[in-house]
Image 1 (cartoon, rainbow, N blue to C red):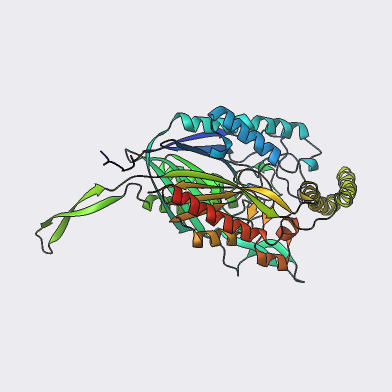
Image 2 (spheres, rainbow, N blue to C red):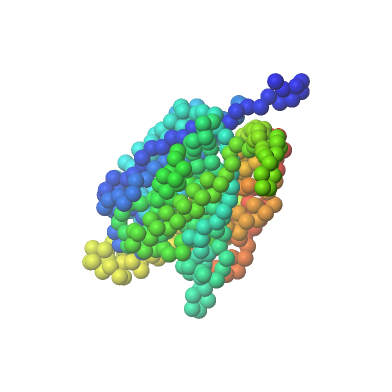
Length: 473
């Protein structure tokens, strides 16, 4: 029994849930500017929404991850609202993240769809309750767990910003730059020692499957989960990292064996790290010495304190907006480009259609930025920090560069820190300051000014400090 004034230690409870969210054949797929087809013809591997629910004392939270490229704020709000309604938890205790696979349903560039719009509308309408079901299921089957975390590395990712001839920065594979190869894992074990769940965190754009394929896939996170679940048992949940400037070492291809191979490689690396994690810390006590050729110490191993504080904090950052082109100018140019795309498609002029379609795709995100942020000095941007024992999970909307995650990890008050993008809605790259001088796709596409990265780092570090001061070991 605790002495007077001591805090009563609470058990950490965890539960998992999963729901199939695979699109039907014929649903608009991908969303690549270079893509000739619009509908996906079949499924190469199932796609899921996976949830883990956590509780310690009166503190509860649910993390849900979906095999999807992402959703705009309207659909994110619908999904989070459905989760909140079904689970009874407020949105502040929910984290909704996407793997960012580029070979799932086209859930984010709806204006570009001219074939199958009825099917994508139907698919989107079905998602809030299906995703919420995974969260609800996780809450229904919670049980006491021990937890531990660890880090290692896997080299399937590369810096994707490449200087082409003439100095243009393009998206490719940069073998000279050092990529963030960190693999993070959190393992949750039942009291009988079996694994209930493994969370795997890794930063890499799921773009191994390119515009050439019309198959729905979860990209590399899918086979990664399969391998981890086969090796450890239980359920594996993937959290995408800060992958704004990271891509696979081989990608943008139609060879489906590539994503399976890279996913298996990451899965084996994650499983190895997870197996080495000690979820139940023990203290060795010398009890005797066994006489032998060399006298051998004999130990008893007593479990140490298993208190695992759980906490969650949400913040609304004010990120600065850069000067944007006027909405009227972009809209007129985009309308002309989309009309030209359909003319070329009808004429089966594929090569020219793809060139015009690429321009239309670029103008599409410029128009979206202008409509959403034009005339604003700043915009609200969601960030969350979850504490699980000595581990911090930082999540933010959009696509932060990997250098942002490195800076947060280096100064974090937590023992282990995982930094993610693609969470709680919203699109928008968050490049580091150095990238603005170089230019390139991510810089051209972002609505944010070069000060945004510093604000994200500062706010994340402040939130971690505050959360780790409020919840004491």
